Image (cartoon, rainbow, N blue to C red; front, side, top):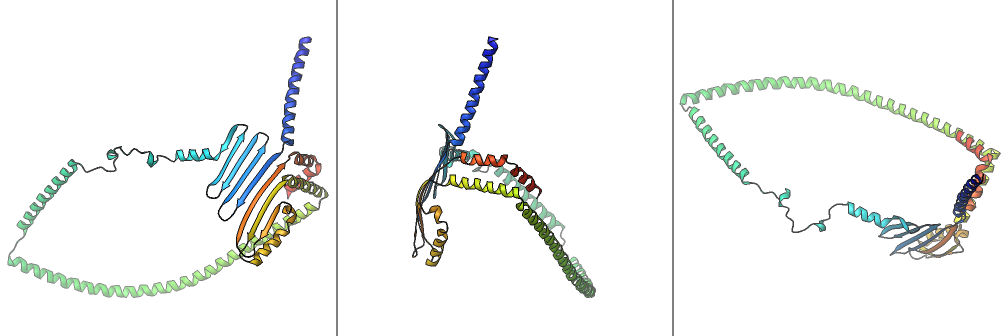
Length: 347
């Protein structure tokens, strides 16, 4: 019996330790703030932005410099999880062979780029040339032997050429007359066919255009009908009382979220000037509409004579998760939220 009690005691202690660790981690996640700090400096020459985020054991540092790009680093305790400089080094290593790494004393003659023609190929070329010369001489001798030079052969050849020329001229005249008549007939037929095809093609194009217009109008009418029905369903959905309750709770959560994200300690300076005094004054009036958001920490100086934008900002803040988690859990547990969710899926 004592052994059983001892085992149960050990199991209870282990369970309590595990539950205590889980509760401690949950409280640490909920109540430990997310601290952030943003520094920015901008002028005509340089643009620098520095960002630092710290949460429990995780620290993130990022910086942006005009002309150099973005650099970032993520650490967990003493271990670096992400680093932009290491990525750049790996990319440079994977690019391939660098020209500066090559040895100037190396011999690249055997690589195939600077190969010279060999003696065998030159010898083969000379043998082919000699064989061609000998064959040409034999052919010339054969032709010289076969040619006859009597006067009878010359006269006979002149008579044959005269008769062939007369026959060729007669056939050419007959062919030209026949082709002219055929061309006239074919041109008339082609013109008549083109005229009929042009008339039919114009009518077909008009019919196709009217059909396309009618189809597009029908599609637009269907889309308008669908949109109108969806708008009616949305109006009916918003008019439900439980939907209005869920929306009110959601707006409260969003309001608290902005309240937690809002920086607590900040300072800044802004000097701006646009192309003209009128546009500068118009922009200043627009910024005055949201004066409560920046009036305590940001100083604005308008320049009505020059076109310039200069800024220097230092923003600090903390985000507490428990301020959002409580209302969010209440919203998820409520019956109205699930009713609105099921009704929204049907729209």
